[in-house]
Image (cartoon, rainbow, N blue to C red; front, side):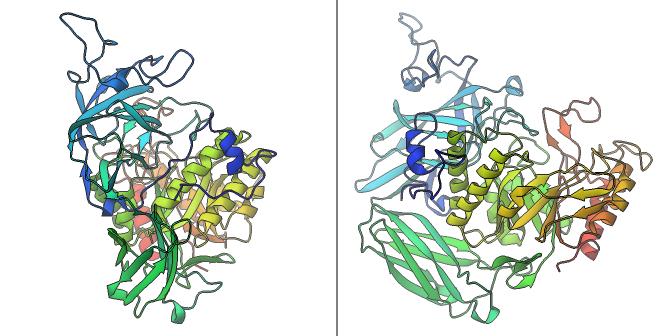
Amino acid sequence: MLLLSRALRSPFCNTVIVSFACWTALSAQTQAPLKTLLVGVDHRTTVSLNGDWHYLVDQPPARGLYTLDGKVRDNGYALNTHPNINTGPHNEEYDFATAPTMKIPGDWNSQDPTLFRYEGVVWFQRNFEFQPQPGKRTFLHIGAANYRSFVWVNQKRICDHEGGFTPFDCEVTQVLKPGTNFVVVAVDSTRHVDQIPGIGIDWFNYGGIHRDVSLVTVPEKFIDDYDVHLKHDATFSAANANTLTGYVHVEGAPAGTKVQVSIPEAGVSTTATTDAEGRAPFEAKAKTLQLWSPETPKLYKVHLASGDDSLTDDIGFRDIRVDGTRILLNGKAIFLQGANMHAEAPYRGGRVNNDEDVKNIFSFLKDLNANFVRLCHYPHDERMEREADRDGIMIWSEIPIWQRISYEKPEVYAKAVTMLNEMIRRDRNKASVIMWSVSNETPNMPARTSFLTNLANEARRLDSTRPITSALIGPHPKGNQMVQDDPLISALDIVGQNEYVGWYEGKPEDADTMVWTMPNKPILMSEFGAEAKFGVHGGKNERWAEEQQVNVYEHQFVMINKIPQVRGLVPWVLMDFRSPTRNIPKLQDGYNRKGLFSEKGEKKMAFYLFQKTYKEHSVGKPE
């Protein structure tokens, strides 16, 4: 299946939205979609390339990667040659063989002190042994690298990728040889206006190959994509919630290829047939089916097979939908009690990239009595969704459209579509993911509204089973009145509301008399809070004291309990995280201090307030 192969039914070359025909014309300005994005790589047999990689820093203007007119060079560091020290002539005066190493996956900022604040190009290289197999295809899988990546294997450029938080797969079948091979990856974390996110971000811009790297070998005809879910009818009926549906796509398969779908524990065994595009839709009734929920996060072994290829995934089945102002999980109204979380590792710092990091984060959530987490402001490591599936934690997943980007440019919309497709394609089979978010705190203007409305519709085209959301900011209060009438609301199923009454606006007690006018949709208080440094104590109105953070939240609770549409609490933020804009010495020291935990896992007083509130369900109600 060509990733993003189906054309959008939208008029972008004329307005603010791009069709794929228009996108093709823009290919010189933005990346073309990679032909294959493998779903379920973490459930396949792979050859890990994690470990020590040599690295070289290509200081601005990055002459090792770019020509003077900005084109990518294939005849420089990518060739992985060695300088002839004694007799000359030299290469371009680089040498990976004698270069230092760093751990991959991992960001360079937290591994090399000289690169802590570096944004630019770093080259990575490693050798690996491989024996090509006849009748097989092999892909280099990179879980994510921030922000632009250029990949060569054995001196041949095999792919480029833009976007710092989604996976990509590069076919290397034709360039591999028996024995020793090498891969070179250039990663450029430089921020530009026409990227997503843009230049101004309020989190640390970790650079590097920060998620797993592996080689995936598959048959010539192989399963690259699948969707197995509970059938989403117009209404939900627990008595009839036993029909599973979806599709399996077999790359390279002719029409009529057989595909087997079996879930032994649920009594499902069915055979489907591919169409001319390699897609095999199916529908089957389960003999027995326990639905996934936070109380019973049941996962089933789902076996997929076609020809010489097969894989087994762990999938839960549940129904999520909106009814008026209610959020229904398996037909039951729910209230979301959670927190926001950046992909920053507790204790050690740096990007989250291993099982221990994930377990630490989920231990915080469990201790909080949370049933929900907003993974902000970009797709996180797939381990997060896997752990949430197992633990029964519901997830808001988001692409990194944060505040201001170039909404008026078709090529930027094309990038957004790519990122949305990559996020949904990777995680659509995760029961824990209950909503897709298209943005955070974007300015209310026509170009933005058109851009995000069409992006929300694209999300629905890709996945009609989940609600679509966005976190809105504003309006500013007029006296004690807050009227949320952002026109983007009409494109959303669930409305996220960010507000900081008591911190950025007004005094904590102002929240007590604040009157909100909200749309008749489910509302999540998707960000609210105040900064406090762990261990700083004082009066309830003393800025930066833990007591003041608690005071802000207590007044917020009074306000929130008066908004009948509120269906979730998502305080900002679970844990303190690095941000280059937070420069108050001795208090912030480069961290956003709104966490319930410090970056070292220390619990602030506000943690205990939320722990008690969530245990007693004393703020908000499901209907």
